[in-house]
Length: 133
Image (cartoon, rainbow, N blue to C red):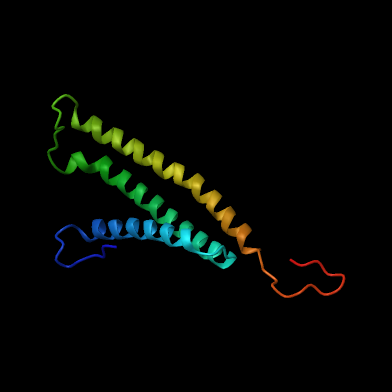
């Protein structure tokens, strides 16, 4: 996994985003080999919720930045066929849609996290007349 590097001339936010994406890919690989465990389900669910919320915040921020981008400097469209301001508007609209869609995903991820938080495991033998949980 790449970690942010002081010798990398890309902006720190870009370096961290790449490291985060690579970290989630690594999480999936490790979970493939992991034994099913409710505490992992809970911890990973919480981290997913936090990540999705951060992604929603980023989408909203990028939406605002892209909306104003053409006001700050001269821009052009590399195809030469489309007004660059139309491209920026289209990009902002899509990023707003990403933020909205993440809202629905966050709602479901929160519900998952809540549901899994109520799961316990009783590995001991059930006493007479008790039902094992």
